[in-house]
Length: 225
Length: 239
Image 1 (cartoon, each protein chain N blue to C red):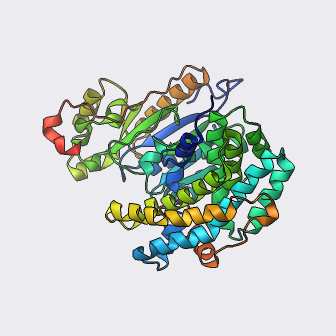
Image 2 (cartoon, rainbow over the protein chains, first blue to last red):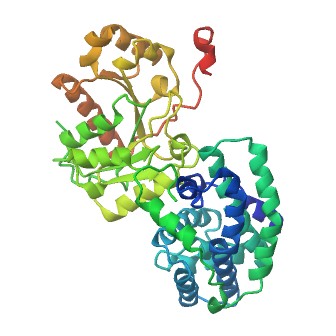
Image 3 (cartoon, rainbow over the protein chains, first blue to last red):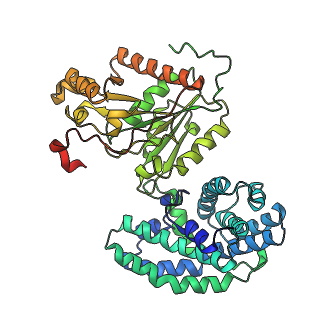
């Protein structure tokens, strides 16, 4: 009997997942370096959920849908192209592709038999959202759960990095995560029904993209992106 | 002299030797890697991965040293967790190792430098085949005696900058003897870039490890995360 999807969701959302998550800040390091105040981080998290993270979640959900209707590498490439068109910052695209390699490396070990992952492997430099979509398709994770996973992971990535960059009572930061949960649900409601690459929301955030670009060029940084 | 450099099939083990260089900040890890590149790049195919706390500082130092083609020196950024990146979640490092092995199919040795962390940071045996722990005399003559996983159980302990000993009031012979005692007789090299014999001793050690690796006989050993507690009463606050 396959494991309960809730358990798989916990596995994938766990920061201890060995996929180099500790190298990422969700552009929070650059935001703080360019003037965002620590107290503004909850707003930053919400802004991400409404923009760059919405693109990620939409892409993951559509990749899952495409694979579940027996799409192959060509159809996944359309999803990846739609994602790239909605992610104008080369730094954000690069970060997502590096994270995809780490996740794919792990997924290959956990689910070596997965046909969905085979289709991803044949893509040239897939993005993380497509890999997550393929994992979800293989393990039987639903579209809304997948979208929540993408949103939750993004919020935790920003908040965990914030604790290293601007240390404070960690319970305050966990409060930020807790308070962002309704926004994550809203994100899931927005993208869960999507099935076509063209329907992935085109809602970038020029400010986050500009920060991500600046971060990629700096010579002093703790986090890769 | 690396007598096996003309080995007819240098990669029976399927890939390059992955050699970790770890130790506290400032002990000379980057300089040691620069030295190895200078000495070995003429006869072995090398690549270097640095784990920096701040971006690619060490990678830039090594590229500027001009000891190896700049493209063969890559940095892993660790999100303020240099310890995690070489031990608990080695994914970021493995991706770069594999990238280098893909791009340079004939690599003999990949040198991995840890981010200058502390006495407890050692490499996972899933990331490196062997590891060198680096101390220096300027860090104090008593550090070797204090022990710790790297000092006690890394494959090799280097006590670096022995030429500085007169200036910092350290008895090198005593420090090396302490180190050997802490390691139960495991290899220790007192190194100085101005002491040719010490450099040759280091190269001979690497040559031996590489030969063992190529013979498929090298078993990576975990130095462990914990220090022995023999001297716990002396430095209990360090634990």
